[in-house]
Image (cartoon, rainbow over all chains, first blue to last red; front, side, top):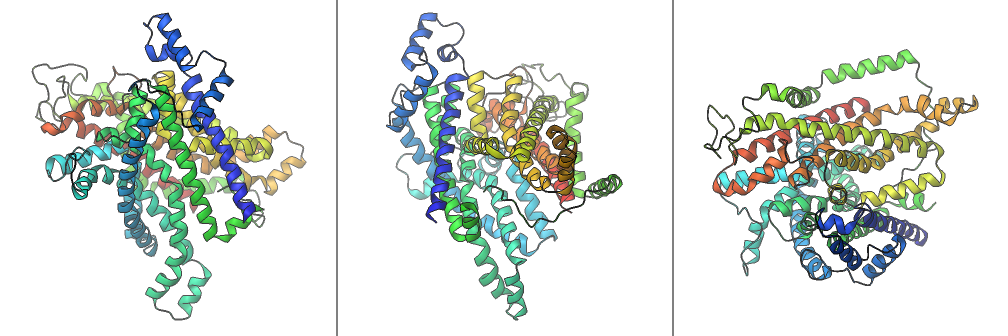
Length: 317
Length: 296
């Protein structure tokens, strides 16, 4: 078990290192002359030089990388060019907002999608199954801004039952806040439903086909008992672990949803930073998103292997 | 989870050419009878026709601003209404198909060619390059696709070529992972061993022997990725990082008009939104049908 954990941790560390290289490359090497890219083609050369000096982008690449990465892990994320405040002061708030939205969406989607996946598996290859699978697939491939716009049109404009903005007035109750968050959360729910339902369906079908299920049926146990005690118990926990590994994709969706609903989370921060060419803010935000994803994947991976010894032993070799 | 080789995999006899042809014909027959596939083809077909002949079909000039009729709702003259500059929304929806249907397929093609090559080489030779590639794949996958593309487009400045290169190169390692898994299975089979014993060069074994036998997963991956490419292109242009602000584009038209929704103006956003949704759903129906035809 210790060897397995060490191996997983080692791999995650290597991936983390590569991640920092990619982010560094994209934000400090790809633009060529960073100062010129930020200030535009008509800016004075002296202004460009002084910005490059301020950002440290006139130093050799290796020094730049080392300065940036050591500052990052010391908690010094640099200064945002667009907001003129330290980057770290912006990230905390944004992260809280995003987590609130993501958690709300998850609470809605996980039970719904698991129910859909189990029903599809039980009705395998019949009309109900195809309907659930195809609807889920179709909904999850439509871009978030399209589903978001359609939801706004239906619930915000035509039925006029839900607020279009995600920002509840200051000091409103939790319930009012949730009402304001419902449309953006529903957009995420639609994006994630198909994916989670598909994994649940596959897991349930696998345990429906297993020998122990056949044995349970042959013993003469009623169908309801077999499904509850033998099928679902074996299929759901691994499913949840697999679902957890996919939480990172949620954040990609947040960029668009938060921009569309004007909600001050990580996604909108990344969008604003990209729009303003605020490279210090952009690279820190992207790196934090990446690290969050890596940690979630690592934890889910470990949880999954605890539930499924076969993986544990074959991975440790 | 890394793919673990299965030592108990059956040793398949290489399929004779005519058997392969029969299998292919059988798949085509299955596809042509699949309602999912047909619906997908109709949806995608409509938009391909619009992309090719849009300017001929469009009832109005998509760029002509009718300044006296800005933001007018659907009428017999403008079936889908007019936008904030008085341009015909229907014509812009028809002509707008071209923008996304040029960039997305080219990006996917680039990603598939590069990804297949990487997948073949790493899966066939294994070793250090294999391990290294898989770690890079994991690192790239740790950042959501849309953020990677955003980062690269901001760094390089938006243009058609940037979009194609960025999306293609981000797809390449993901496709490589799929191809690699398929190659790992094939490399154990007898026809590959036989080719090796004949002393064929690695390039020949990979591209002439293995590649034809892993075309199934590659075709499926291509169609699935095509859907994601359209997703990404549309989203980037909605966020204001599209290829070219001067040509009609669905995502861009939506981003310029969604502020008017609260005023009851729904037509300049609803129709491009439905266009994107139908195109992507169409492609994914096709992808789903193809994947199922290979599973049987």
